[in-house]
Length: 418
Image 1 (cartoon, rainbow, N blue to C red):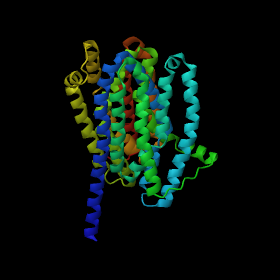
Image 2 (cartoon, one colour):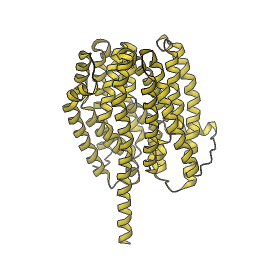
Image 3 (cartoon, rainbow, N blue to C red):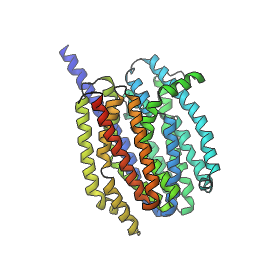
Image 4 (cartoon, rainbow, N blue to C red):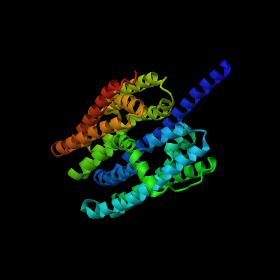
């Protein structure tokens, strides 16, 4: 019995580290690809056209997050508790598939109404039409499933293949500023490859029989999991919302600057995202390791914030080799301010996602993220017109500070431990 318990313990640790490694691989692919692609695109199409592309990408990714409807929290939690129950796995899969299909139909209508209604989008219709392919491609994404099953190794390999396809197409076909509208198409091709292969593999491996839910059941699911939707949507769209606000109130070059700043900050938040995704299923099953999880998240956040602040000058100049020195200096200053974000995200992950949410305080966590997001947006609309893209950075920080503080306060209020 003692041997079996030790064996189970070692298997659990191996599975956890395997998933950390796999998720780190996926995030590293995205990060390294971004490090290469962003300077390459800016060189080929220029700061202004890159800003136009970044605006369309932000809109597409906002709709992608709407389509995901919090599945990376609610569905992951459900799958994590039913890993070996194929009947229950089938039920969860069909719930998510039916809800995503309904949302895709609704979002398609709203997306095209939006781009045809506003001249700012209508000037680049082909760009935005290609951008919607990202939403369609993500319809088949099953990242939530692999996270819940704690089997990210396969996802890492297939994600690498999709990233290589995208990078190869960009390298071969983006030559002049007029090619800017093709970029979302190439992102979509890589995404379709990743999504379709993983979708078919799961269908066959887990013997999934697709059965659509009735409209009433879909609407009930949307209502019941609204808190998870808010909890995942708002924090994950902070960056895209800020890019959209700067794009609406500023110039394409300013959009480029805030987009580069958000991407760079996301790179230094990668470790926190990985640990959060790996620890979430574990925390959902047991509360025994929650203190160790919290400690790991906070320490990693502090380290990443310090590294980001200390390396901003050197890495940006090395990374964005551009003749426009003013833009580089503006980005460096922005990143030094944004360097507090990784540790703030670690606090939110510790006391919010792996604290309030795993203890079924979804509604409280949802209210916190909603309040923090609304305040962030209000500050952005106030600051951006007077301070350009830096106003977006300040609003970003303010939103994270409020979310982190409230997560900590309510965690203590409910006496959730640690």
